[in-house]
Image (cartoon, rainbow, N blue to C red; front, side, top):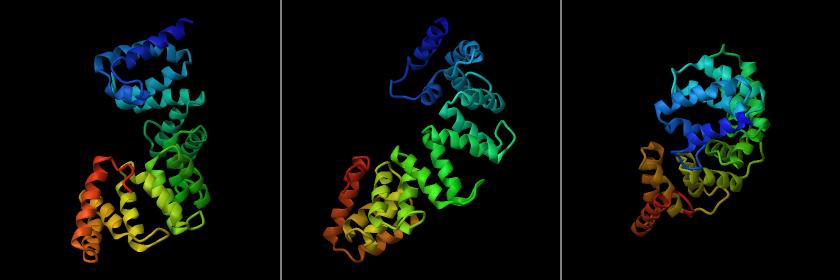
Amino acid sequence: MRTRILILTILLLLFSSITSADSFENSIEVYGADKHSKIKELLYPIAEEGNVIAQNLLGQMYFRGEGTTQDYSKAAKWFHLAAEQGDAYSQGKLGGMYGVGLGVTKDSKESIKWLRLAAENGEISAQTVLGMSYLYGNDVSQDYHEAVKWHRLAAEQGAAISQNTLGSAYLYGVGVTQDYQEAAKWYRLAAEQGDTLSQYKLGLLYLNVQGIIQDYIRAYMWFDLVANKGHMNARKDRAWIATEMTVSQIINAQEMARVCERKSFKSCE
């Protein structure tokens, strides 16, 4: 009972200056250094008793150097203890650390092992990384179907990178049957999160009539949004498509782009 009360007190301290919607990860990032140091002292005995939340938080603090000297080896130690108890975030973090040799000896098998466990437990970033591993054959045998499987799980949870990757899988028929409508669907979801590559791809889909109605105004709108962020291909495509449009259409497309950006890319079509 005392352990539960203490960990609750620590968590209340962590959340005292943030909104309830923030994650533990964000709360660690925004918390003051002095309070971090005190929290670390409080967390240690609880973590050593085996409390998974305390172990996870200590791992994050050592990983970022919050309230303590940054120490990847100690971060790996605490993530490992939490990961062995099934904590998905710690499993994913540990998988990434083994993948690059951060605080541990680089070990591809250990990396994939922990990433897979995290992914199976629903950890979004691990699903995305595992999907990329299968897509490019990094530390595993290249397998497009497995890549699509993991990217779909992450995409369904809102991961923009996986949504974009899934869009490309459907666009080119990699690991799935080619389907332009599905490609547009996933690109659009990523585009609504501000993913510039997906926004550009949507412009191309509207330009090239690949499974959706050709629409120069909407194509120009997406190109304009991306071109204004410095995307050179989007600038070239915007310039070309302008030669096929009337002045009225260009003005309309530019206004749509401005409205779309003000709406944070939501419901732009």
